Length: 61
Image (cartoon, rainbow, N blue to C red):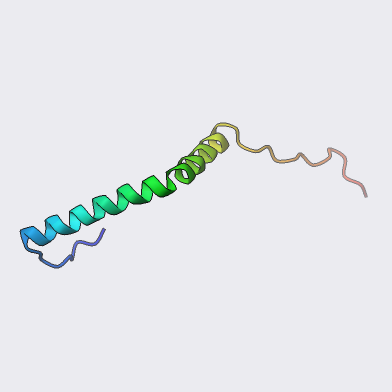
């Protein structure tokens, strides 16, 4: 997180914050299903990780 943000007036800080909240609200409204699908898939992979195929016990020579 950058700590060297420029100084802002109180009203400018509020306007930017309101804009960011609105942006996030609209972004989630538009892409929410995709975001939830992604997180659901990630959760499924963590719960049921794919099993790597086991090599044959006897290797051909």
